Image (cartoon, rainbow, N blue to C red; front, side, top):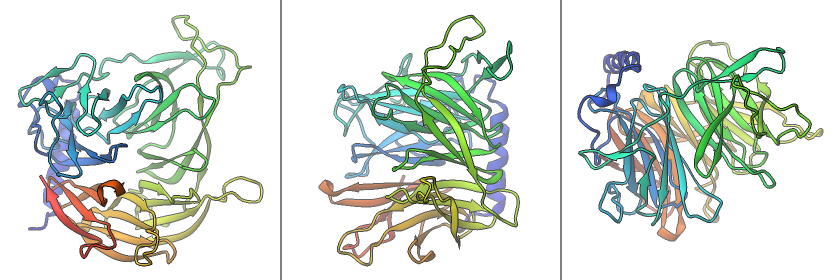
Length: 442
């Protein structure tokens, strides 16, 4: 049976009510999240190893004590346990966002993972170590709960930071995580820089919080105020500039990471402590996307493999906008809208998948979830049009692309929110099931 607008409305109402409870210690109540089931999955992340998926279970109906991040093996399509027999996963606050994971560059074979909770307005950090196919999950202050998952504390009680404002002499500006935090982006240090960065987005007030990450420790150091409804980030693989969308604006914000200014005056906080210099994230410009319809707008965004084209999902009207961000004669990005491609209702996540050599039927393609019609639309950017569809489970929400040739795997995974499943889409052009959802995992 197809889902109805009434069901969606009921879930949204429940979700809004639950968010109002964020100040209460709701994670001390109720049944712990199971280690082997999804509850309204909102995100799926491919592990850098190519062997695992990390599925964010949203707990949108409050059936469990909180949300969770669960690991699934891409070969067996089973939930993973570590060498100790413990589930590879952890429980966090309600309404969590996408999980971001990145290996450390210190030779330790440890990866750091971060996820935000909207309900708790908190950031959670875990470490992953040992066998990358069965990693041991750890977090400071974590404890095993009845279902075997690790329950991790977040930063619910993180105090705002007050720093001197160089624009307003003698005054301080307050830095926080922002209201209703959701998405995150990990920005590894460039060559010659010492600190990785973590950027987080907040829906309500448009805060882009900036953390330095050193040996897994995330320290809040700065924040930018961008458009309200700040939704998602994507990093250009060529220029390393960071692009951001908003649910309440058609404009795309462009951020640039700059090395610390050696000539800048030292920054002092309200306690008189001088802050260490750190990379600066600056708002470089915004890209205007003309539209005649106002309202619910930007969602997911992705870059072509060469970094020259940006694809952005918009909801009003339902479309994917292609933007030329290649360098012009002056060396700056062209920032020109080159196509607006109509897609199915309520587009959301978007992934650019590179071509398969020797297979003309598998050129560069762009996949976008269309929640309102239970499908993924397939776009050929060379034609600037939809060339196919993939039927999915109810309410496809997020996408992750896995290309592991050593395993013979080339697939797309989709978190089906209302179906509470993880869909498997075959992308091997030699398969008779090419561009079909071949399974739904529960």
